[in-house]
Length: 191
Image (cartoon, rainbow, N blue to C red):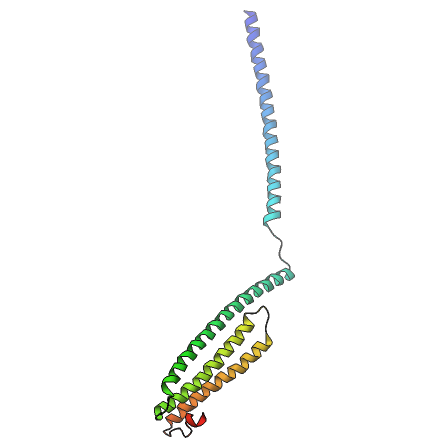
């Protein structure tokens, strides 16, 4: 009887106390977890803002970056120009070889009117090729160096004038032939 009811009542009361204590502890645990998560969230947000949101660059920094990039572009352009100068010098050397071959075929004596004209044009164009080769090599000497070589640029200008004079001479020889008047001064008299 009575002792069985007392025992059941005691177990029920103890169970209720344990359930209430567990619920209270669960609430405490939930609150602690929420506080920890909020605090961790603030730390993560602060860290993200610190590392991922950057401050605006100052004008000085922007100018430094632009200057550095322009320097890189100038260096690339200089290397490209150097390569083109060397390639153009090679083309001029090949042109000289081709023109020397043409001179060997058109200039031996005796020459008639067409051979005389061809010899004059080929001789003038050879001068243009030599001037062009000298120009491109002088430009390569400046563009391939670490710094600008003023003497090389100056000599490129002078050699460019020599090249232009050769082309003018070849054009003049052809122009005279177009006028219908044969050349008065032959290349045999010049040499």
